[in-house]
Image (cartoon, rainbow, N blue to C red; front, side, top):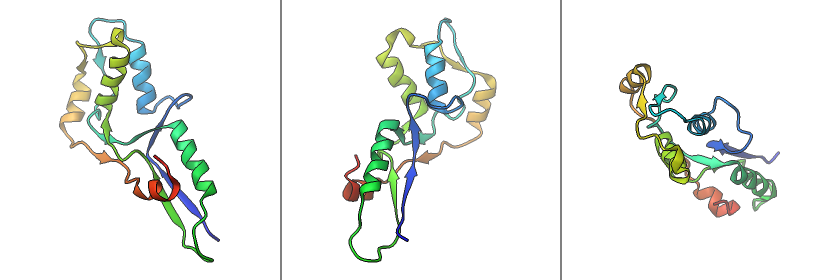
Amino acid sequence: IYSVGLRFFSVYGPWNSPGTEVFDLAEHVAALHDETIVVEDYPYDEDVKDYVFIDDAVDAIMSAMQYRPPGNDPPPVVFNVGTGKGSTLKEVREEMERHYPELQTPNAQRSAKAASAHAQRQPTQSYASPSRSKSLLGFR
């Protein structure tokens, strides 16, 4: 039986689940009213991730459903669904603030708990190699 696998990277968008980084960050940025904001929940804001908008993930699913490999008995194939570009949560926050200047947090600081967790680990990197998805599915 022929099969296609899709490896999704960090998908975000409307109706995202609370508890996910981008959803919580958007909620946090949108709720800013204080002059000094303490960033409690983001000790990993320098981890590099490949953020993919939900509409792009759906497009990849539709493309994969229509993919037909050559040959009579093709092997299974796995496609990465990502941009191939890594971004940190800090960069995502700065981009949100760029689009919504009234939400800028110039006085934001890490809580002692978040700063301690951040100091004890090296940032991770996780981003897609989308070359197969681009060449075989046309996914961008």
